[in-house]
Amino acid sequence: MAEGGIFGSPPEPAFNDEGCLPLDVLEDVFLLHAKKNEEVIHQGSSDDGSFKHGTWSETIFLICKKFQQPAETRYLAVEIFDRFMITNLKNLHQPVDKDRKWCIPVSVWNKSSKKCKKRILLYMLSCVQVASKMCSHKRILSCRRCCEFLRDAGVFCSRDLVLDCELCVLKTLNYKIHVSSPVVYIEALLEIIGRSTQVAGGQLRSIHGTSLQVLDLVYLKRNAIYSKLYEVVTGDVLGSTLERGKTGFLCVEKDAMLLAACVIAAATYILDRTAVCQVIGQLYRTTNIPQEDIIDFSTVLVVYCLS
Image 1 (cartoon, helix red, strand yellow):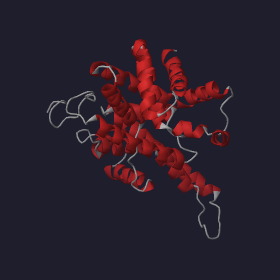
Image 2 (spheres, helix red, strand yellow):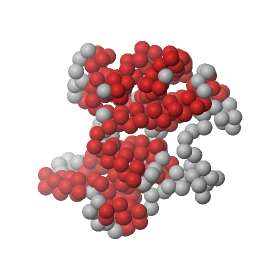
Image 3 (tube, one colour):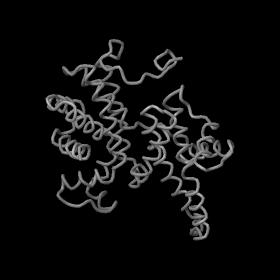
Image 4 (cartoon, helix red, strand yellow):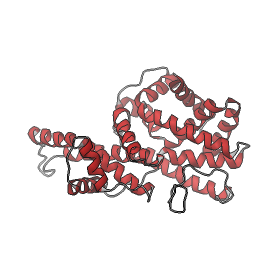
């Protein structure tokens, strides 16, 4: 059946559609997303984000492009991969016997880390596989297609190994794989903007498409972008993880709501500067994020997009 058929996933959100939720219900749903975002900010590890930038994100994006996955899949896959790798490496580095406080032998750690490095592409593929099942019933990534992809990449794996790796990802994360990627906040905010302002549905769809391109750039150049933001806000150079934690900047890096709002503002500026003030004003009223913060971050994003 065609992509737009009854069993197909829509190519883009239908902003301002008459069949959508009423504004008050939409705002209640958005508050639930905001609460979840706050929990992620305060409960996450200081290591969060270590594997969702640069080459890590680029490789996962390319895998998703190869399999024609929807946008949400690539962002969710990166988030899952980041959490899996951090948890997996911590598990490998734990003492062999906590009661006797034995330290893991260097030889064992080296062997485990080499195995992990050897399977890194397989882990990425498994995270995409898991994310595909969360995002699109039509485009679920099967073990057979994974094996074919790996074979073309010069890596020969059996279907059993691919399945075992997928289970390894799920078990390592204790099957808690449902996280809200920034694109969820972007689409919710754009829907509210469409209901609360004069921005037309067609223009919102254009902003949505550009927002995803800006978001891609944030993932690919995450470290450089947040370092520049820190410099703009504090006038200082971004330091170590410990220093970022003391200054509270780690919370900024984990804030998906802030990122979504600023990505929308940057995308709006790129497309239509006359609508920026209206959009930023509505973003402030919806999220309570100070307009100055939105302007500072979105300006950094625009500079990187246009450079």
